[in-house]
Length: 171
Image 1 (cartoon, rainbow, N blue to C red):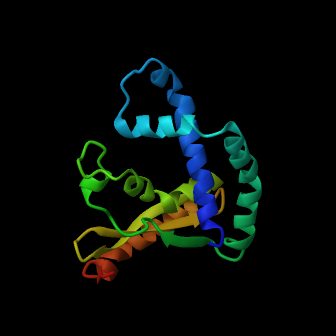
Image 2 (cartoon, rainbow, N blue to C red):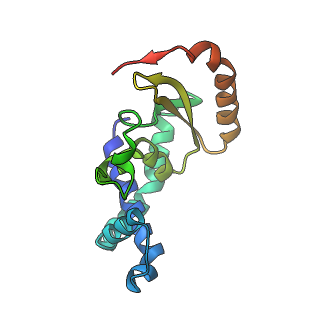
């Protein structure tokens, strides 16, 4: 996906800015929020409105572009679900001493652009890594093709025990 990083950046702008908007009353009154939500909202409150408006303005044209290029001649596109496998829980748990905010947000990098573009998607496990953690793919389709995604996932699930039960992939 040619402009993936840009799509991810725009998706993050919306995530942060909308978290700030939704949680503004709690931030103003210093109401207790879960640490991750508080961090998202505080970050979003520092994002210029112009950035948010630009990200919203570009959504339609970038969605059309994606549909006309990536999904032009196919029914479903497969992407990784996670950038580098399932991380250790301490890295993505907000109250852990090992917590890494970027690690947690990185977990959504392949899914965020799909949400930003407003496309239907489904995540399906296909194998296990050397640590026994699931490896999953994200299937993305055109709007209105949710049924097709579910049918594809069901088809894969029916065959998975035979095809993937003993499959282990390494880095």
